[in-house]
Structure formats: structure tokens, C-alpha cells
Length: 399
Image (tube, rainbow, N blue to C red; front, top):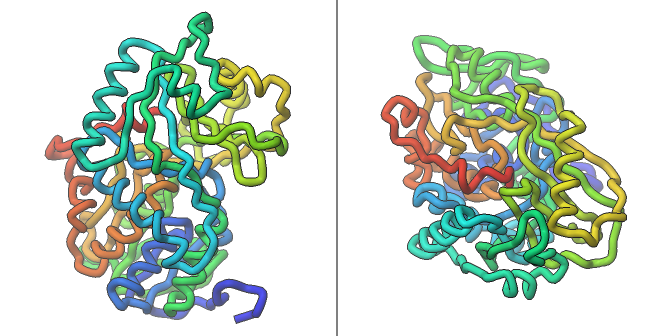
């Protein structure tokens, strides 16, 4: 390995025990935990572009576990507990900052929904509080809680353990740890097809040759449905652009993460000083990593409703990722109709926060060929049984 590189630059071999499609946070975490927890190091992670150049580099890095339903709270809280020890585990600085997250309420229905979620979180052992407007102001002094504004703040849910992390550092740390355990990380290697023989996935065809595998695990976010289609699987997913932006560098003024469904924006301040801002997905289906300008315009207007102090801040850059959204706004994890082919998709706009948790659970699923208990509610067959995990309420504001 070159001394300036954190991980080995590997050439693809002709065969592996496990091939993971997608070298984003989920693919890297899965490879790491396959090797660490299950002793499976004969793994290749294939990435069509550069490592962690997809949604892992195109999100707003928010980490929280305050989801409504038991099933969601279980997997996201597992992830948050792993986040809390991940720097020590990986031996690399992740800039993980537990600064808390506020979900603002602007109507009586928002208040009812927020209180309900707080009580559900507490039942599930997730830290959660209900705050009145004055308490919101204490946590985040720059939020406008005046009753005269168009969307008055009537209160907020608050999760103190939530926060942010530096996405690049997370990817690099996972890549280094997986590589050190023998995993091959192969960039610029696009998977163009999955070979299926007698109902079993046996190989992938790539732009760098054919690779056979005992097990193939998909973890390609917005492109998962495209790859799965080559194996004859139609996934119930829609792919949309998701846009975000950062401002110029500012002095520290925003101490937490603030989200609002009503004005539809979420804002935090990065370690260097940029305001990081996002909203919901573009309505149109697309695989482009750019979205419509009016979405950016609306989220900036929404931010000014809550933070008049930002009126003179300048936008430094915008970007977009492509997200895969399932009918119930929850992920699809587990076995597929094709033997030895595994699914991890449908995370929509909430994939980053789940990174270590899904890596842990997906690795278990692959190693044992049966869903991890925390992932079991998210199998593909819930769309035929009707056992949906409808998280549109808790996932409505993207992250």
C-alpha cells in the first residue's frame, strides 16, 4: 500500500466469497463487519466511480434515532449506539458531534404528532424530550420563536444524543479498517449485470471483467433497482434527486440541528463553519445528481422563516444525491427472490445515519443467510403481507 493511501488499491480477482455492489457508507460498513464480526475477509466491494463518491458524499451528515415506529427506532438506535463508540473502534477521527436535534412544531397537529413521537421514543429507550418555545430558544438562540411570524414555533421534540459526523472521515475510516482486514476495495468497476443460474446468483459482470461469488450483496442506493433488474427482480422503489447546499464560512452561531416539516428545511453548522441545509426530494423521478433550482430557492426561503439572521449569508455550493424511496419510506433489507442475492436499499433520505447499524445487521444477514432480528421487519415480502413500517411522518424532512 502506498504510504499516502489509507487503504490498498486492489485489482479485481476472478472469484470472491462475497461481492458487495457499492462502496458507499453502507457497503464499506458491511464489508468491515463481515470481516470483523464474522471472520469473512474474502470480500470485494465494487464501486462504479470513486469510493464514497455517491450519496455518502452527497448528504447532510445528520445522525438521529428518534423515529416513530418500534422497528425503525430499533435499527436507528442500534446505529446511534455504534456511532457513539465508532471513533475508538476504527481508530480514526470522525468528528462525531452529539449536539442534539430539534424537530419544530408549528401547528396543533405538529404538537400532537411531536408529543406522540416523544412518548414512543421513551417507550423504546430512545432519549427524547418535548420542549416549549422558551426551551427551544435556550437550546438554539437564533431560532425566531416570536408568535407574530407566519409559522410560529409552538414547541419541539429534542433528542440530545443526536448530532452530525464528517462523512468523508467516516468513509475513509471504514475503508481503512476493512482493507486492513483483507477486503478488496475496487474503484471504477461498474457492475453491468448479475448472472443467475437455476435461481441462484453466481457472478457479476463488470466493466473490469466477470467476477464469480458465493454471495452478492447490493448496496447501491438509487441505482439498486437498476442492478437488481439485471437479475430479474423488480423492486418497489422510486429514485429521486435530493439536493442540499452549504453557505460560506461563518462564525459559530448555530449550536444544534434544527428541522421543520411545516417550512420544510433542516439546518446545521459544520465544524468549519458552513451552514449545511437541505429539504425534501425533487418530485420528479431522475438519476441525475442535480435537481430543480426552485427546490433550492424554497429551502432558502424556509430557512429565513426560522433564522432571519441568515438573510445576508451567501450560498457557497449546492449538490444532489440520488435516493431510492420505498412505498412506506422505510428500507428494504434482507434476502431476495434470487438465492444468494441480498438487498439493502430503499433508505430514501435517511441512509447516512444508519451507516454502522445497517453494516452490522446486513453483514449478519449475509453471513447467516437469515435476517438479523433488527432487520427482519424490513424484508421485501412486507409489501405483499401488508406489514408496512410507515415512517413518512418521521422521515418527511429528508434527514
